[in-house]
Structures are given as C-alpha cells and as structure tokens.
Image (tube, rainbow, N blue to C red; front, side, top):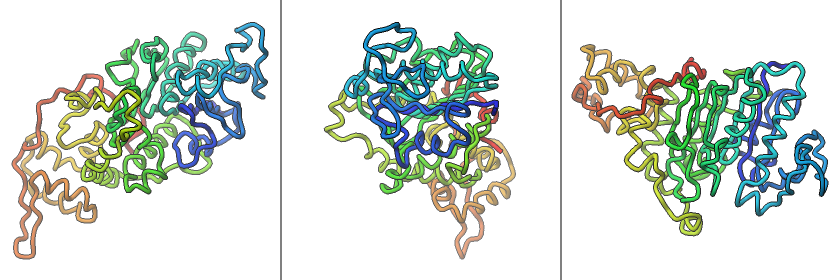
Length: 401
C-alpha cells in the first residue's frame, strides 16, 4: 500500500461530478483506488450522481449506507442533511471529517503522510480534518493546499475551522483577490491561529473571484486563464512533492521564465480580473466589499507589492532573473551588462517584457543598441510583509526545481 494518502475536499455544492474544476479533476486523475490510496469528499449541499450527499449516509461506512432515524451519534447517526442546510451552513462537512478519520483508521499500515487539496468550504474542511487527526493520529504529518478557504456564515471562528495544529507540516493557501461578497470572507492570515511555529505556511493572493483559480475551463473562455493555470501547476507540484501520484499530469509544467510570464499577464490584465468580481445579484450575499487582506494590507503578504502579486511571484522572479532583481529591488549590483542580457532574454516573453518596460527599462532600437536601465533601487518599497510570509520555505514545498 502506498505510504501517502490523499484527500480531495470539495466545496459547497461541488462534487466529483465537476468538469474543469481543480478538486474534481485532480481527484479524477489520482493514482490508485479510493479508500486505499485516496478519498474524495463531496461538498456540503452537493448532489453527485455517483455518490451521496454528505450528511445523508453513515460516515463510518464505505458503501455509504443510509442513516437510520434513531441511534447512537458515535455510530454515524447525526442529523440528516439536505441541500439547503448544506449550502447555507455547511451541514454535512462534519460528517466528511468523520468519514475521513474513519477511513484512515482502517488503513493498515497507517499512512506515512496525508496530503489534502480543497477549495472554498472544502479548503476549510482540510483544516477541520487536520484538527481531528491531531487528536487521533498525531504522528502522521499533514500537508494542505487550500484554495480560497471560506468557512461561511457562523463558522469562521469555530476552533477547528480557524486553528492549524502542529501535525500540519506544510500549508499553502491561495486567496482570491477579486471576490467581493461579504459572506465569502476567507480564512486569511489574520483569522487563523497556528499552534506550532514549525508549520511551514504561506498565503498567496491571486487575481480573480472565488472560482477564478479553480474553474480552469471557464476562466480560459473569459481570457483570464493565467491565474488558474498557475494555481493548478502549483497544486500539482505541491502534492507530487509530498507523494501524491497521478495517472497523468493535471497541469503542464512551467519553467521559471514561463511562470514569470504568466504572472506578468495577470498584471497586465488586472483590470479585467477585477471586473470578474461578483455582480449586483451575487453581491446580495453580504454586500460588495474589498477583502480585508487587500484593503491596504496586501504589502503584508508580499514584499514589493507594487510589482509582485504574491511571494511566489517575487521569489520565482528573483531566482529566474537575479541580476534584474538585485538591480531594481535591492539597489545592488554593478553588472549592467548582465542586467541588460537578462532583459534581452525576455524578448519572447512579451508580457514579462512589457512589465519591465513599465518600470523603466527601455529596449534597444535599430538606431540605438544600448538598453537603458531603470534607476537602481527604483522598485524598492518599505518592507512590511509579515514574518510568517517572509520566513516560509516554498523550496520545502517543492515549488522550485
């Protein structure tokens, strides 16, 4: 039996039936057999054609036997959930937690590590599961990739939804920058307590609304595919690094230059991403509000936020174009020829080249062969990024070759 067990947690009204959505597609491509190598937890309020709505089956059973009307709660006879309560309150996700813990308890031998991928309430379900696993299997390390973790009304302050315990060794959360529904506030760095400083954790803002980083097909059709493309790549790389195997890659592999160009495209399209925020009808769900982590606080999430979208963007740029980074952002270096050569290398990366032109690089022209460089140190800003963000190791998450 594989040593690593992977859990795919769906969000509200989402399930394994989904098409072009990150949790459904990753779960569909997982290597092995469900309950032996991985587990798919359909989301609260979902109605999957090949499974059962969470809360309607005894979570201790693999064949998902219907709950009896009366009986012992410890045997799975919690209240019966239906679509409305699942949608409104997340009812059924606690049964998903029980179901996952019971599944892991039956594995022999126990897994050497547990990886999780979740979106929305499914991302918070990852936190809830890890919270319970710490009580029963404290020796098993947990690694979580959480896409826009939203707990929903009345759940954000629940201990198991807002506490990440020491059994979680690596935690990466994607935060949607352009979700404006007030009831969709994420469990960002200010809402979550880490009980162990040893947890390697980082939060990465990405352009787009709540579904913008997960619904690849829909986003590509709207010409806003760069954000989900990169999130899918990071999720695949993260999970594979910690032992999850796939029958075929859920994402293409992007080298450092391609990743920087994807980020540059996001920067150039930022106004279009902003327009993807929910309209007036959707805004009825708590009004239209800029998320707290963006409201004059984005520089706490990334150094030099005027240019970089998130810390991964900054670090992959620094690794890929070290001379430009040192010149522009650190006011260091005297190798102007090296800086110019790195700039020339972006010729076939038009979005990236344009973002560099926007900060002061002037390309050579037919009559002028010399590249003009921006003022050294001109891109530097006062660093207010939170310590957790700066100290997090993305190399330990496998995000750098």
